[in-house]
Image 1 (cartoon, one colour):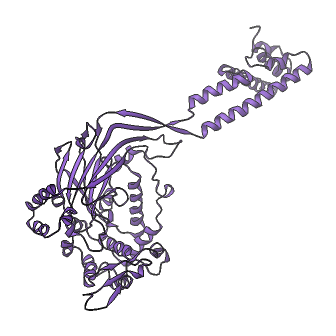
Image 2 (image 1 turned 90 degrees about the vertical axis):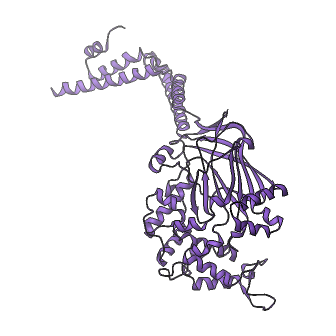
Image 3 (image 1 turned 45 degrees about the vertical axis):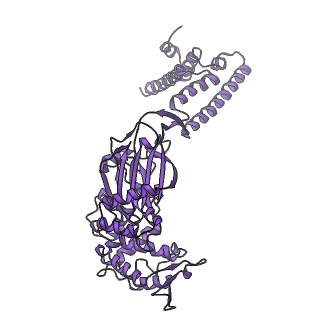
Length: 534
């Protein structure tokens, strides 16, 4: 190098010449394309020509860089699908009888439930559902051959709302606020039978948890056979309750690993449904409700699951899918590890929304909705008094109508990682006559009273008391769906360098050259200012 920047500064006589000399000193040695022709060209026309080219290339480079940065800030993503094959951990399975409460145990229920059921029995309900409107639903009172007196279902519900209190001591009004159009807006077009069932569920939800468990179907009566991979499974079921199905039972075991596909490698259950215990009018179907979910998650049968019909063998084939999401800034998702550390259960979006709903009731109504006892325990608010007074019940109703559960209100985003199970369901009539007699004998060995009832029933009625359930992996392949960014930071840096090199010949070292020139020019200005002051 001929000379140095210090020599240039010291040999220059004026401030302007010093700055120009520093600029020309570096441009003559710069690796940046074009700028040397702007400075060293002998003719002004050539200088202008090269200056226009340099400015045009710089503008094009700036636009190109802007498009690259915009592309990166879009945070676009795609999903990679990988197929794996291995032994698969079996999911948790929750089973519920569709009948919420045994009719023989109504006398052990709360006074409110007993009053509700007494009103139904007093009217000796027989419904004839109208074809056009709920008002055509008919209740026949007494023996129809002796009297023509008929009471419409709508009139019965009106009488019920006028006279019934959820708690005889505390509640003065019916559950719904008749003066609130919001409360009735969603109910107005429902059939009276649906309204009757919903009213019963509301009454049932205010029972204490001990009574709910005692009046519901018991696992010992309902479960006749349980095996996993053809081996008898232990009775390690956990119990939960909800206002749609009463008692539900969940089986999950870390030792349950499917090493082969098909029914012989999965779970097999035979259930006795106790059809005689079904509540008239309240329970409209026969069968069970099944929820298949990841282990250590809270089942919500009222919002998810599979309906299983009585008198049938139902085959549920599974396919395991693992989903991994990128999280911020690509997509908002919930960190499942943080949730588990706080609540000791795995995160699901449905659970988060339910927790948000119950917390809103707790905060606004200052009482507890007992419909979801276990979730209240998770939230550590289970010691709060139950919502029973008229104002409290109306407050709960208002929140049920207005609750949205969106991400802005509750922050219930999809989990950053989760495991779901795709299901394929098929069924057939079950059991045949020979097996049916074996099942009846099995029931008779444990309950003489039930045995006597079964002997007085037809073959079809007996068959409808049983169902068989097979849950298994269709094959041991599993899918992994992993979100990946379309445009990563390293790709952006690479394209950045390529763009600058394409348009004006810049590299990383060239950038440092420019920084060095700017620093030298600033240094010269500062020195000149100090020199003038002195």
